[in-house]
Image (tube, rainbow, N blue to C red; front, side):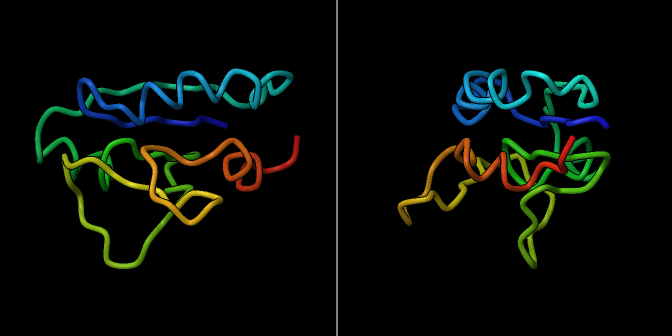
Length: 100
């Protein structure tokens, strides 16, 4: 499986994911991570980025929301505490990943 992280340069959510993902993916050699910098609306449309960061597992948005359009904007994720954050929480990431 491939986990594609699509993000714009300097995205705070991408920085959060860089810290969160290593322990979550430890022992998961079946998941390869690819980081892609998206710098134009055309690239966002082509790759399916609906805000930065967008997480795609084998091309499917892991956190889909109805009506989201391709965008270079920052993407916010509802947190475990109900507040919006720059990236999904470790618990949310673990919950959407398929079992090994």
